[in-house]
Image 1 (cartoon, helix red, strand yellow):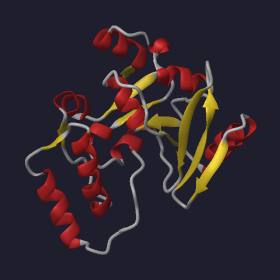
Image 2 (tube, rainbow, N blue to C red):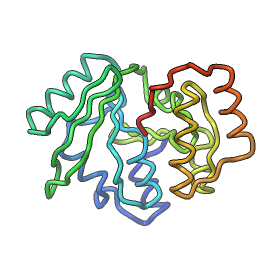
Image 3 (cartoon, rainbow, N blue to C red):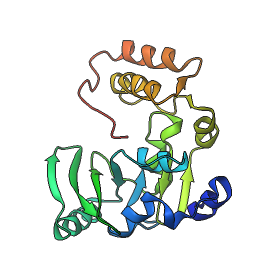
Length: 201
């Protein structure tokens, strides 16, 4: 773990408060080491000095924490677009200047801490979580992000992960040796496993 503010100042010479990420989070309920946590694409893009034009994905310790966060967004006037057993999707304007965003609350699992959140992701480049102060990263996440290298962390939904290889290829990431082989092998071993489940990153 490291301070996200310090990390951005050292690696990009950009102040955290100047990022779109900070402006969005300022208009949402606070994060904390005990949850909720922000993880996934918006955080990865900020680390790459790109605009976080993907959904802002939030993960929770328990159902009560998720319910409180949801109620807060309802009070702020965001519109609920979709709700499934896996996630709740909101859209609206938040923060300084009314930044328009899409927010997803992930609820197919709950997590003990930020490390448990990042351990659940399929690719190492997704293994980033933020608790409002500290950035938690996977062992190889920063290395692989810097090299634009797509490497497997965990295979839970192989068909969904295979689809995401194409998505990341369009963003300039290249699958490492063994990445596709691992996913193909997992898909062949479980051909009917979670065909409709999609990762949120």
